Length: 270
Image 1: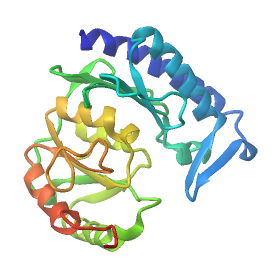
Image 2: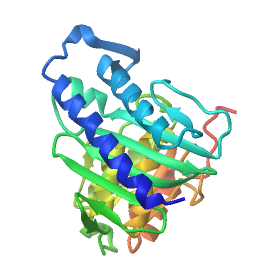
Image 3: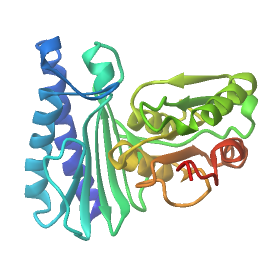
Image 4: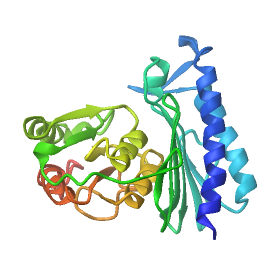
């Protein structure tokens, strides 16, 4: 399978969806916003963009399954699965702030092999494929060379569910506030991961995530020379709901900070 060729087609699909999303921002009103749960929203823009993306991807690989945020299409155990977030950062979008993004990944046997993230407001297209480089708007990118917390800027997100881990999460934030250049909460995990890949952030962590939040961005980080794990240093970041991504030089220290507070604990209440 030619991952690079597939990635080229997905870039076009992501840009087209992003153009639609950008244009619709001028028309959207409060009555168009549906509440899925507290602090989780959806609009006709998310749903329409997802349908547009799925329709085009079906032409590209007809036999593939889907994991989609808005449930437009599903999976029945296919070897190839598209993982799609048509609008990552919906809350930002409905409030008229950046960033928001289109995130599309192709996974083969559970491993992302193509990843495209289109940040709509800045017109930034990030992409990568397995065994290839990572790019931003055609320029090859790489993670930073930072190795000490005092030299780093960290990205994170705030969970809107699964609050059992909140105190430990705040403990990580407290440590990072005191020992790094600062923390940023952008509101789109896909963009956060791309910012690690391009060297704007040195690391990112978050929990209470979904596969469509991280699949494309995490692949882009890895192909840009970074490292991605779950909070216990394993590979369950795609479907496990938690992720650490960092520049390779900084990963050992950053992993220790997060793991010591959030790793290897049972939050099920048992």
